[in-house]
Image (cartoon, rainbow, N blue to C red; front, side):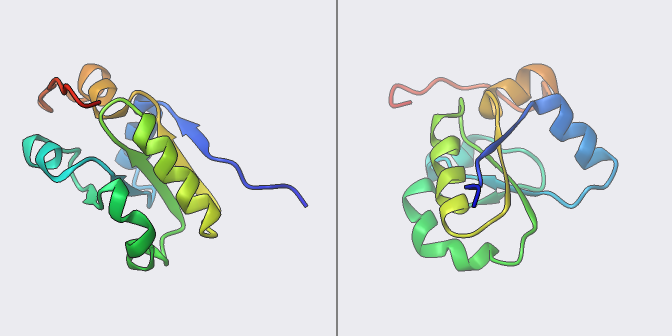
Length: 115
């Protein structure tokens, strides 16, 4: 039996799918202070360190795109979701930083000493 793998999606492709109305649940796994600075419109926030305990909150979502600042934590979050039984989980390549650069420059960029 094949193991499900994290899928990768580029910011432009994700934006195109969202604009055409595809039902993709956007999950932001950054820390609270980062989320308070900026986020992608219509996204939902569950910090990575709370994801395992809060996975039941999103159990009925069919397609999920996970993002963070640059992508490392989002990939870990996506792996958690795959291991929890979700079938179609995307890792947003480049995170919100890439989104800001190629999709929506109104989303402010920020620097983090931690990540």
